[in-house]
Image 1: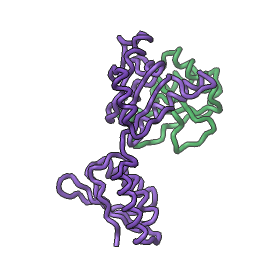
Image 2: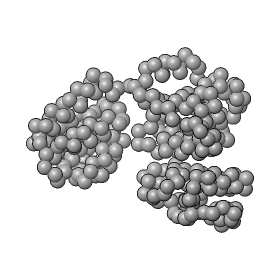
Image 3: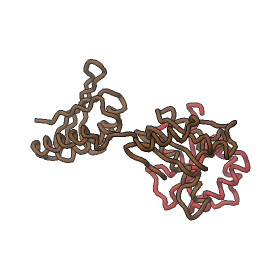
Image 4: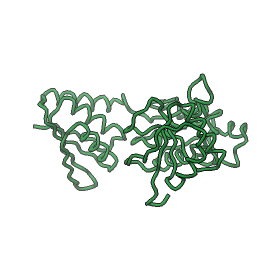
Amino acid sequence: MTLNEKYLIILFESVSRVIQAEKILKKSGIAHKLIPIPKQLNSDCGVCIRFLSVHRAEVIKALEAVEIGELLEMPVSKHKT
Amino acid sequence: MSEIIDAKGLACPQPVLIVKKALDVCDEVTVLVDNKAARDNIKRMAEKYGCAVAVKEEQGHVFNMHIKKNLPGNSDACKIITESIIAGIEQGVTAGQTVFVISSDLMGQGSDELGAVLMKAFIHTAAEMDCPPSKMIFYNAGVKLTAADSDVIDDLKALEGKGSELMICGTCVNYFKIGDRLGAGKISNMFDIIDVLSTAGRIVRP
């Protein structure tokens, strides 16, 4: 990851949708990561999908069939992983 | 008058815990620590509690941290509580390493699909902890997480980078045939695993 690349996250309404989306992204070979929803955000479903902003278009296209909730910028955290 | 706590030489997270407990009853706490991680963790915690924090670096990489809050407190109670906390630590009540035991690639029972999601979230969050575990032991299907193509391999590498030692059951690696593609950790054996488990201060099994 270079310095000016940002992470985006997608929140979903349910864990099942997250699992469904993860399967699709894996199949499509788009780099992504399933992570707990950052503390600053609130949601009933505790996990979300994170990816680099450069993959934004690909991810949205791949997930056309899945009802996605919100697409957000990853909040700035003290941690770098 | 403020209490002075000498937290030099104490392992993470003890300095933070001591200061946190002291702040429950004190207006003002001065703490001495000898590493940057403790300094940063205490500062973050104290600021979260609405305290003002002043840090002075003294000789020999010692940080003198003066923490002051606005609410009134009782300095006698403060002295008693900090003494009892320190005594507790000296007696080894909270001593010993924290060991995470990863006995499966799933977290909990009920749904394997959900269990896989939860385990990924667990490992990711563990890698973001200020004070990660001293050791993590992987056995049975837990060893699959340490394969180079595992979804959590970056998190496990981050944990190693923060000083966690990853011990992987060799028998299990052999059984699942992943010996040629381990991505993190070191192969271990039952002798070392039993030694670590039986001397641990705290065992966490997700």
